[in-house]
Image 1: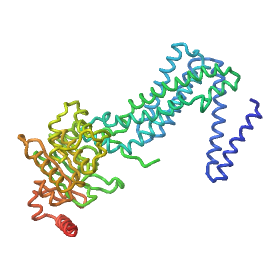
Image 2: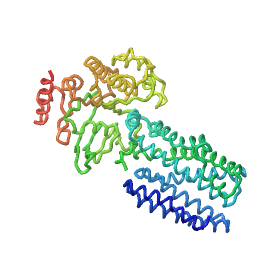
Image 3: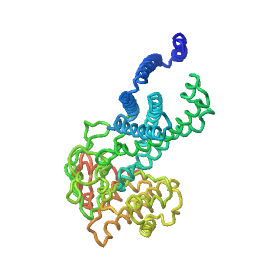
Image 4: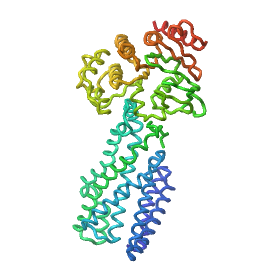
Length: 253
Length: 249
């Protein structure tokens, strides 16, 4: 893509900004910040990847993946800031999901052990797992309000934290996985996924692009399940105080 | 149970105190009616005693061990709180009755469950019915039976007859009186029962705890309390409730 064409893509941002101004949505500043951040972040990562692909040193690959995990954990953890220690649990969960998935992909020789494969696929795994974490936390926050009576009733009957939170947690795990599963059902019919589109635009054979997309979809399904399960298991106690009371309700943020 | 110098601040204003210096002793076979105006912290006190609520200062101890030395769920098996608003688990009446046996991996005592259900006037209720379809009063009684099946030492009852008709109310009162006093071994059981009904307080208690002005103002034997309350606040409270009852008639 030429530089001129790249600059012309700003037209799309302008459309959003104009709509925001005319409809008095007050989002112009957000749009401007978003545009600048997206452009700078993507250009930066483009140059970083260029460098890493050239050197192909494992330390760089690990560093990049760790950075992805930390940023994703910080971002998803913002959904439940009042839950102490949630960010470290999310980071651990993402590391588990990424580690296991990558081990299978590399172990079975599904992808080549080169940065060109490992980094983009890791980005997809960690990114979608981050969304699963965010959904899980959002649902749990809602459950803490709606199912509070149910959980307290069970606690009053001598239930442990795990027993009291079991049903709300199960509902949250389910809810956090549903978008991924729904995505699998409609992919190709409703939306053409970004990675596949990108490969086709860059000149790849559509059938080859689809094969990779199938791989990604299946990886996403398993990583969503893994993420939701692991995070719920290692974080359920954080919704309670040390003496097994429910965390106080937070003013809605 | 020993309650020593308990202080709790208000939920909406942590700098203001809901009550302070609450000290009391709950002994086996005690039947306590906890009375007082709305907002004096009666429910909060019961929730604290079942470790569902935090407190700022003071201690509570059971069997000579402070609450901090207990595992919360072991404490709550012995000291169980029954909320005013009954919460049904989504499922059948039978499923709700089996809650305790399921939580604690115990065999389900169907005979005892049927006995309690009959005692509260739910003997004819179909156990396959969805608990959510029961009326408010039926749910309140089912929730009580569910807690009784836990066989706790102390029951903390928060206006548990507020949705009941006079007949069912009487049935619940008789059952709970029998639960405490009708034991072959009267060593263990006791209850603290929040009520706004003075007649009920007379029937169900042998002691009154009266809360007002940010504290537990009176602890007295039931007959003595009603014959001659020690504080002006209690006198006014009783008078107010009596006048309210008259105007209802």
